[in-house]
Amino acid sequence: MTITQAAPVSRKVPLTAEQLKAFGEEMDAIRQRVLADLGEADAEYIRKVVKYQRGLEVAGRAMFYLPPAWPLAVAALSLSKILDNMEIGHNVMHGQYDWMGDPGLSSRMFDWDTVCPGEQWKYSHNYIHHTFTNILGKDRDIGYGILRMDEDQKWRPYYLGNPVYAFALMMLFEWGVALHDLEVENIVSGKRSLADNKPLYPGLLRKIRRQALKDYVLFPALTGPLFPLTLAGNTVANLVRNVWAFNIIFCGHFPAGVETFTEEECLDGEDANGERSETRGHWYYRQVLGSANISGGPLFHILSGNLSHQIEHHLFPDLPARRYPQVAAEVKEICERYGLPYNTGPLHRQVGSVFAKICRLALPGRRTPQATPSAAADAAAAAA
Image (cartoon, rainbow, N blue to C red; front, side, top):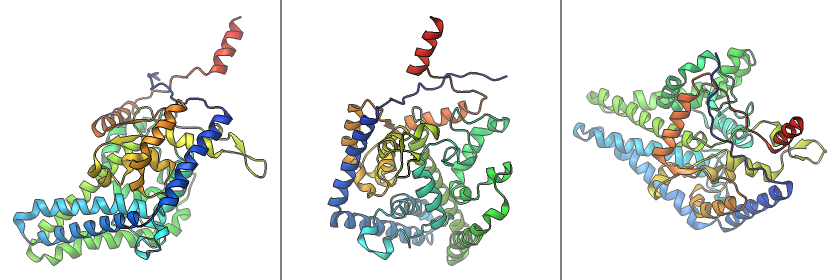
């Protein structure tokens, strides 16, 4: 039996073509202003973050030689991995610092401390996710091929395990990201073959081998008889990083009120060849409605890679993330003028909202249809 559940009321505020155009121009103006202002302060910031990240890693590795300092070693290494993945790796590989001309901070050359190869991640994330953000059937980050995260995803008995799958993905998040490009769910459904993944295997296996040797063989072996303690410490640090990254990312994409779109909804204009396409203004509109922020202090934002400003990140993925807090108030004010929701809240509230959704969508519910103005008019005419 299918159960109809009450879903969050749609917050897709309809804007006219003229409003979408004006909205897009205001967002473009913010982006251009920040690009024109990039300079030494931005370069100094990211270099300082890299310096602290490396210092924390060295301190953590060194303290593993002192068994009483084991908790401090784990804490330092965990923070190092979080900074490497969130504020450095994610943002550098978005090309946010390519303008510096620094090979160590180049999106083409940088790779991060995780099992997912940077080149594969840049395709699935920078291109697929940021181009087709929250478009059902196009953005594979909706549920990561594992979870049901939207009412319009067809329910199957498999999804009764939604909370279990989410917990496993949280604990093993770096592995989930690494395997994302393999599209296992499409192989199972017959839409993709194992042969299609053949070009991905060498890079993936090379990266997995390198990370496993570093964290689970080489560094533990360097501590000699303390091998078991160091191995356990490295494992815990990776788990801490996984849990943190999962929660930050899910709170930016899946709390209550975040909207998804159909491909048809996004074809609001025409390209140079006269084909239907999405206008720049609608793309910005989709980013705002398909994202959520997490409120917090400066240190929290740094440790989140400023993905606590997920709305601003989706609007301006190529701007240095340190700039997101600076433009957030302006973005919010513009959204309010156009009547668009600006979804933000503290970490505990967004986490609670996400996990409530994960549990609710494990059940065979479907979205309660929302009455549109045209539908209401049609119904009134029929009644008459």
